[in-house]
Length: 193
Image (cartoon, rainbow, N blue to C red; front, side, top):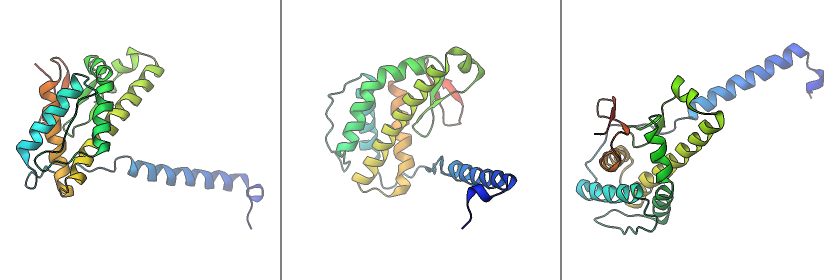
């Protein structure tokens, strides 16, 4: 049996380097497990989904933690979806403050993103950036719980996920305050008027 203490130093370094390279490559490919496909609206009750998304995003924007949402028009909201809505409503003030800073925007996939620029790095400490990253990760995790929860609970095909994301992004842009950034259909960042 080969033991680390018996490997020549150069061999050990090579082995560790190879392990890091392989592990890093694996992590990089797993960093974005969700592929955004062209939205497929065929199997969705589109108007009902738009109304539900607008109701949810309005409650979140207003910070209404106790807002109640019932299943409707073939759209099933499980307990995980309801909890994600309440959690998003609880953090909505923080999300708005961050979007107001100009260093975050709503992308077309229905997620919030940080604008990692030189100005952003100069605007605060590394601790501030860590807090912002945690805020964005938590928000996006809850959004995924809503999108996937509605998809699975309502027994829609997987290809409808992108349409759900797009509908929620449209609703979010409708209710977000003026001056905040979002990504338009062409992929440009624009300020809400």
